[in-house]
Image 1 (cartoon, rainbow, N blue to C red):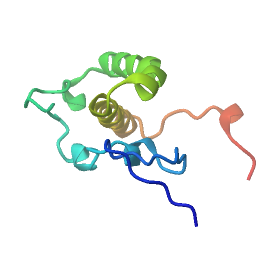
Image 2: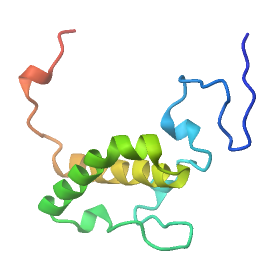
Image 3: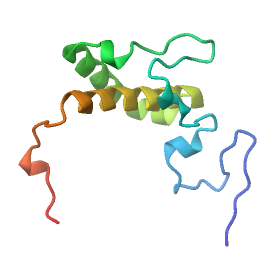
Image 4: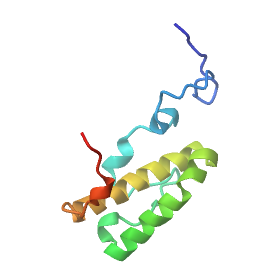
Length: 112
């Protein structure tokens, strides 16, 4: 069995790739989903509650997050990544709640 030491920042030094980004972000606790308004470390809001956004604003916010996803994953601080993950989950959950019967493109389906 191969074990890697844990660096001071909480990440495994072995470069393990079998953990999700959420597991590799030390302060990620999952509790962010319990408070849809969210708050940063200083107690400030981290975005408008998705339920208060118009459909157009919701799509625009999701587009912005997806456009910045790779840079955030690769280069942002741990707290910025955790906030990005939380906000993406909030917005996508709201989108799915509003569009439960969304149109599925048949070309995007896989054969079982």
